[in-house]
Image 1 (cartoon, helix red, strand yellow):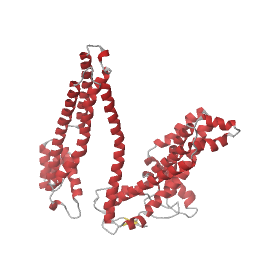
Image 2 (cartoon, rainbow, N blue to C red):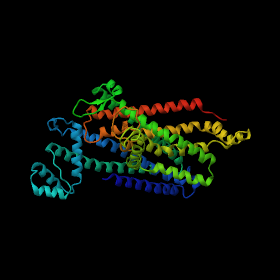
Image 3 (spheres, rainbow, N blue to C red):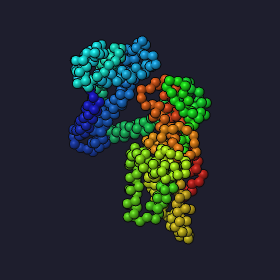
Image 4 (tube, rainbow, N blue to C red):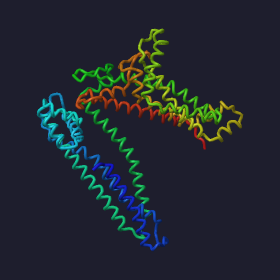
Length: 484
């Protein structure tokens, strides 16, 4: 049974439970609401929440555990002899999932029979024509085909039982909540406790997600360092991955490119964004502000691939023809300066919009007091407003820095993919995020250091971002001015 159908049925049960719960308590009280502990709506919500929450929790847990259990079971269908040299069991399981997805598109067992015939007799033109007509042209080994059929059967069976169990659980809890509904039942207290638990659970999801991301990075990084020396990774100056062996996976060229491009981007975005925020909040009229702020914020809505194309087609050739070539600094349109300038333009709204909101949040009484003591408008801004808004401004700059460090598409199209250490901003370089994408693209072996290095690079980015947060917190605590 499709998950969408299950959700619709569970929500229908919850809606029916709401109506029945409200009507039941109304009938038991004889229409006299003064006899009720809570309002009628709370009795309805009590039944609806008891039908909805346990069923949705079970659905989430089932959908999380089902792929793991099915994959572990299907793995037993694949003998070691079916794994070709140079492949791993994980790669073979990926092929099984692909074939199972192909079989899932088959509308009848006759088509699946055609698939088997094509694998046993791949030269049968008539069978292959029927497969192509059904958009199922697959050829694989008998072991993988058998495992894929088992995978398909397990998924179908699990989906059927999922619908039965979740719907039955919703009905059971709805019936229990309806049975204990009475005028003296403290429905409001129960509903508030359930909602509080749901809110706590939603808050814990963010924490659990963060912990899961960190643990996955740490464990895969440990696997990487078991295959590749950490000294060569952290202090190596060569980046030449090769899945055939003999890879040089030094991180320093990627780290240099990441920090260099981010520095140039912040050098563009922070002054322009901050000055724009000061103008809009302190100098601009209401009409100018109402026009300027939305126009600046439009920059945040432009897809990064568009910025990348702008860097590739316009900014790169312009810098090459007008600056790099005349000064003898380079002949390529892809460079650190190209990516940095375009990325800086993209980051302007991150700095200006947040800084503008933060500056406007500074109490007007501080400005009036400063002006009343004889300070000029500019002195009030520099001596009173900006120090009061410093924590928020540092947060805006930190957000822009994190966005710059994690950018990929602008770097790919604007800075190239050359992993090198150079001080010339008109040479092509690359960043950590670009190489993470490159190492994880395709059907790669997750037991090789060339693939696992992506997790080590990701953990490095996480540590850099954490260090930026710690530094920002230190700056805020040291230089901020507190007002009573």
